[in-house]
Image (cartoon, one colour):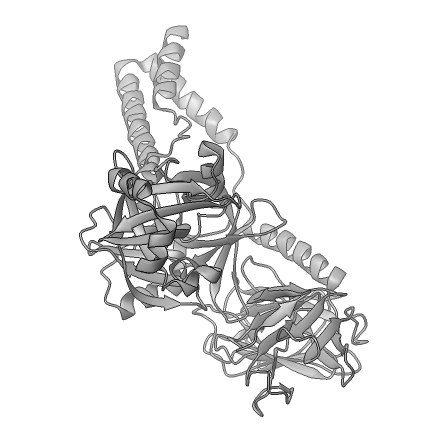
Length: 561
């Protein structure tokens, strides 16, 4: 018996999966990720003042030159098609088609170069290699969407294998993911000269992490939150799974929460590619990386070998059957997904109950009428009569800023205003405001300046929350005397972007006495309370009851906060 055991263990360890720290499919995908340089063209008279003959000679030799100014400012100059450029920043991008289409962020392709913009319009170049000479390729901008923070460039003559886009059906939280790009922090460590150093490594960096959740921003754009670290220079690079398939496009990292990153979802990228007739590849099924496929082949050989051993020796066959029974007896029980959903839902409900509130007040610091924001209801501030809150001042844009109180804090999004929106003195495009923060419209503090108060309860018994029992669903906060519409259409108070949800699916109301009522809005797949076999038209809700929208996967639990 010892002999048979030895043979079996040898086969098992030969076929057992080994740690794939290098992830070969991810390394292959990195070959289609490129560093992007932003350069500002120098007018001839400016170039003559800043670049001498010795510097021109060095540029002609290796493609660039770096100098330190008397003010201790490091400058990089390079030449492309006979034109001298001043280096103004860098980012990352990845190939999505055989026609040289590159995806990156809008804030990379249309970078804010500050005072350098006075010299000329910034241009984006693709860095191919450095040794022996810096090689750059010009890019042609095709489309940019600042709301999605996505840009599409084209590079003529670029060869490489385009990266496929992952199938969204198989992109789930906890999935292992990898950030690929050219982080500026690595440049700084490598050469000590800071971001975008031409002498720094040309191979992209790869950082591993996991997906956390999918969410929508104030403009109903889809993003992934994940924990695969990035730093300055990574912007526009891909977030990929173990198969090297693109899950999203990295946009930025949280300033304070280490390794908390957001990436633009493929659901925002695909329409852009289709509208410009880009021939991209979308994965047809679940990711099975080459290492896993190899392991499966090895396991197949293992099972085949075990079968041959059974045929060769009856004694060995008996032992194998006994071992199989032991393995089955010691197997882990199947995962109870319903129980997991209940646990997750309870945790989410507890979090919502701990901070949920009915309203928050913005007090004008220069005098005037306070602005009261109700939980779950977006308000647009602007000069136009169509704005929810009209501020009739010339410096204010027609639609200036969008505010949404989520029960804990205020989400603010500038709507492309002429004179900007500011939080605590800093200009913002999107931000979160908490109690004590100052919101200011325009740079002039005398125009419109508000102090954010503390969230207060509506008096609805401390408030009510329909907490999701599944990941990726928004909280539904209820206020006394108000109703909330739920559906797939963007004009709902709560938007659930699932195919099974109707455009206007249901309405949930709370009266002053604390009575909660749910009403189905003739949805296609129905609304249910506690029992999926009994579709409801209208029903009263009690604490602890479960609401199902369309199916078991879209479930909520009513909780008092």
